[in-house]
Amino acid sequence: MSDRVLLSQAHVTELEEEYVLRALRSGWVAPLGPEVDAFEAEVAARVGDGGEMGALALASGTAALHLALEGMGARPGRCVVLPSMTFAASANAVAYTGAEPVFVDSGDDANVSPALLVEAVDTLLDEGVDIAAVMTVDLFGRACDYAAIAPALAERGIPLLEDAAEALGATTAGGAAGSFGRAAALSFNGNKIMTTSGGGMLLSSDPELLARARYLSTQARRPVPWYEHTEIGYNYRLSNILAALGRAQLVRLDDMIARRRAIRAYYADLVDGFDGVRILGRAPGGPDGATGDEGDNCWLTCLVIDGPGCTTDGLGPDGLGPDALIARFGEAGIEARHLWKPMHLQPVFADSRAFLDGTSERLFGSGITLPSGSALTDAEVERVGGVLQSALSASRERRAQP
Ligand SMILES: *Cc1c(COP(=O)(O)O)cnc(C)c1O
Figure 1 (cartoon, helix red, strand yellow):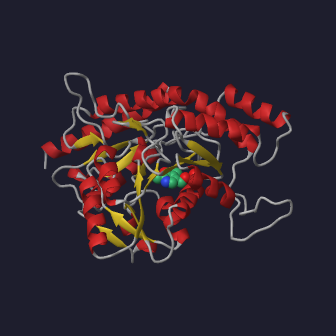
Figure 2 (figure 1 turned 90 degrees about the horizontal axis):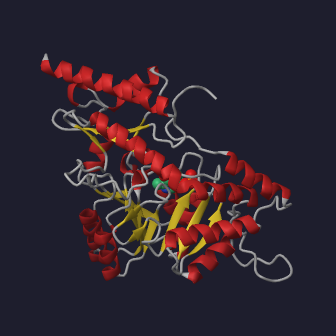
């Protein structure tokens, strides 16, 4: 391993070794098996809080999104409304079904703007556009404003799919990330809050949706003694060995979240005295100590350098912006990245319809993600802090002498 400080590295311990070894020695070296069943039950219990939720372990979060969309009837001639600021997987899954993606801009915390989302839905409905589903994305480990979104969609009879790939363990008023829609997708990719090295999960309280997804995920094989197929399926299941890794990670999830939260608190203290710099999604600490990120799983801590003089070409006030900062970190052997580039700016989705107010573009032009992984040592986090502190101090001095 290099001594480069990475954004969000897989964090595995002896517990994971134990679980994986046990699975290997059990003889279930196959897709499916008892570890998969147990992993599904444990994640469903955690997110569903003892309710009716069921789960389907899959090879990726993208597969979970794809099967959820299929289950909600996404197909050519219909559209799916989703945020523009997200990872391409959200929009790709829509494209797999043949439905048209329609993008909606962000609010100040980068998550989809509830007001603009409702406006988009109403505009489409007025035009007679057939909306299969709305997909929300809980970006960087922060749940969307479901108190505003969920009732508005229910009123209009539009199903909600929650892309909670980044948000396992996050909560907001009314529940856990992954529990708000008719279905939700989790990801256990190597860089996520917990990992199976690669994997995902479809969550739903709708047994029919889940049963159909389960069937499609194993090549749509009919339940008869020979191989019988009446429609096209996929090979999307998670392997038993990887599910064992996931079960160990789930045991440690709360500890890993606590660590990421502590890292965020450190960065927040550090940027506190600087004008025009904020932690994405975090309210300034009030007298009661509330920061607005208590419910976040703090998967990635993002810095936004905004205020006057900020442009979308990578330059913030005083020439300090994402590109300059990422380069500074890079020279110091630290990985930092831009926020997700909005889908309406991606060449592959250039022809898609979008409801925009400029927020996601502005955030993309002013935000970076900082190393946030739970495996980071204090010394590594302080190395990041040192570079950040010196970059911010230098730019403040420049501002004083034009
Ligand atoms: C990681 C991610 C996915 C895809 O998950 P994979 O397991 O990598 O397929 C989907 N949506 C979002 C927002 C993600 O961050």
